[in-house]
Length: 81
Image (cartoon, rainbow, N blue to C red; front, side, top):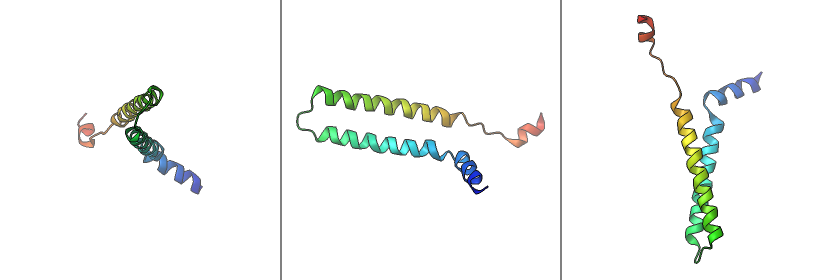
């Protein structure tokens, strides 16, 4: 019974998607700092950073799109109908 309450609360507050965004943001920060600290980066290292940047951009766009789809209703307007 307690597990069900925990799962419901984590779903309501969207814990998993937010945690994944925090982890991805941290990894993006680490990869970017690693690349900037290289003296003479190779093409493969630049390609890796490019792929990570593209993945982060896509994930961030999807995350923002999912957050924007939440519907907020105004009870006052619903009563007038």
